[in-house]
Image (cartoon, rainbow, N blue to C red):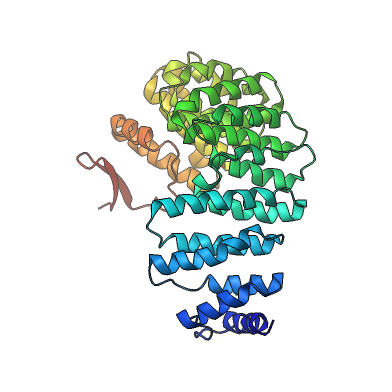
Length: 400
């Protein structure tokens, strides 16, 4: 009891001091590990937290510490378990034996899983810690993904954390199970949770190339439900999938275009506009689809205006006919004369100047930078834009 309270006091003094006050040596380490067995549960937490600051000298020293701390994984108090896990993870960095590391990973999984049967508040703390653990060592819980499936009576904050961990543990081996869960969550009542579930499907598609097609199939099924916020969230994540796998899944664009009239959220509108501009040559009525957004251009949020400007330029470069030509003129006029947004105005000026000098340069530029921000480029009078053909980059110089 005396050792535990002394450690707690020293740790608190150390937290408020800039200079080292409480330094654990190899001699002190042995005493603390011995006292660990006779302390109360909170005394163990104080000692374990202080031991986490100790830097082991070599692999053997690290293995010795881990061996003495491992029994704490079976403790009933979740704080003791998490403190023990923290020390083991830190000391594992120095352990060179792969067999020892593998055995430790196996030993840490059951205590972490047990924490998820506690009260929701403790579950949340445990999940936050597990989220960090699986980023560092996903193999610890690679076979335990089912324990993170959401229950009907879980609070929303627990469900959100479980979703994050499921995304991190998703692999080619378990993706079918995970997608079934996400699809089920996307029909829940809580709107925020549904949006998160739909985004999770998109993140799995980006993470696992071989599972991308299955993820897109699930997203298309969700679009067919015709629930507005589900459709909009699905379009946002499909845009990200298109950017990750260009020219691979464009066959689904026709299905996306059917939902054009239902879009009312800025991010969903911007995503749909990006898709139309990026694949303008494969959409027969791309000019009509973009034109439907032009009527409300001044009232649209900046995100939509910027994307509409870039998409219209792309359409003109891919289909330089009379319709797109009139559209680009109207958009450039709106973006340069009738707006107060410097980002939008700067981007419009750079497109206008490139169009009037060398459209081929702009074709390269918009294909490489589909979402471009030029707020830091000096567009004031006295600067001209040039293009270095060898380096394929823009430069600015003061005009004579």
